[in-house]
Length: 85
Image 1 (cartoon, rainbow, N blue to C red):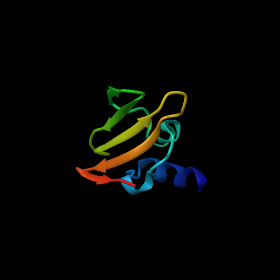
Image 2 (cartoon, helix red, strand yellow):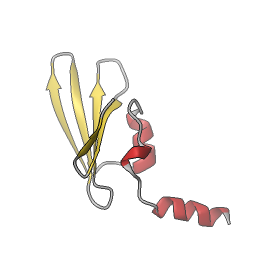
Image 3 (tube, rainbow, N blue to C red):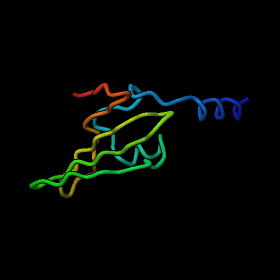
Image 4 (cartoon, rainbow, N blue to C red):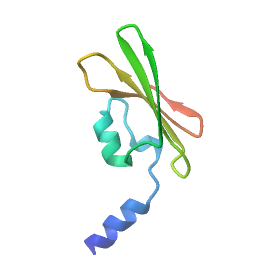
């Protein structure tokens, strides 16, 4: 029975509202796996990293990356709708 629940949970689509602002990049990777594409925007003393998960997830996750700190979720978009703090 437990194996069936694990399989169902694995096959169920992840929704943007299951991801929380402030989650670490490692937590997101553990939940969703590696992104298909990563883009970075570098500016003074920080950079923004965007992880892109295409269909069926259709998610874009923005991470705020500061020197010496772990990257943290800043924004989650599903189908173009942002989820901001």
